[in-house]
Image (cartoon, rainbow, N blue to C red; front, side, top):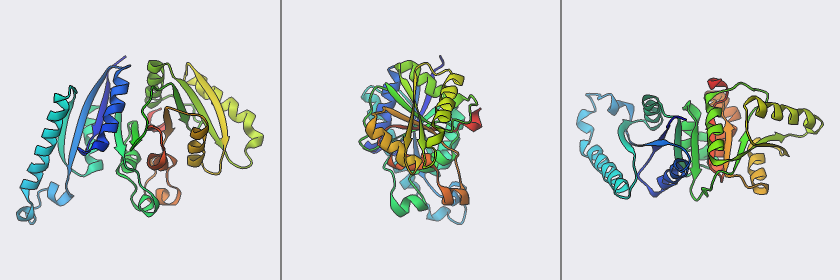
Length: 280
């Protein structure tokens, strides 16, 4: 099995420790290489070196932020952590995308404060933005999320699409490494009850097509998928939730939103989002 290339964006705050702890857990079972990325955010005018703004740019601010990042990285190394450090100047989502591609990262791990109410509708959290645009699996954790041995993995997807893909292979690798049981979950809406037999058969077929070693199938009735996932977790303690995202943008996102993105802000479990179709 190849080494898992993990990228962890960090704002140098204690919040980022959540992501580091998750990387520690994975490294106990799989070979990993960890990259830490600190982004000094700047708008495009500054990035492009607009001569009209050159005199207004306080270069010392950027230098100070860089020194803070270097000090933070040195502290982690002194604490015994091994990683490769990266410092970039630019727009958050753009830089994460560029560095992910340059490193051929297999997984991005991010801690998030989440977002609620109007802020979630307008802009969402930084983690939401990354989940929307990035094409590699992203593992997000909220403040205080418990990080446990991955014995039970919850898998939520469109089980009518049985194409195999690299990102599902990551879920399988984690399950194999931790000896996990994968729990396939289908949220039933009103009127779906008569199709339970067909839905169960489809989930079983999905698991067999993807060669899941240990799996169980579940159905749970709720008005919305995101609520159903949360309510199911209250009844059956999962250690990791996996869900595919369609990465909606523009008007489609404003009208419908993304179930995966909503879970990024509200799921109280480690959440792995991935794109099923694009990697099939």
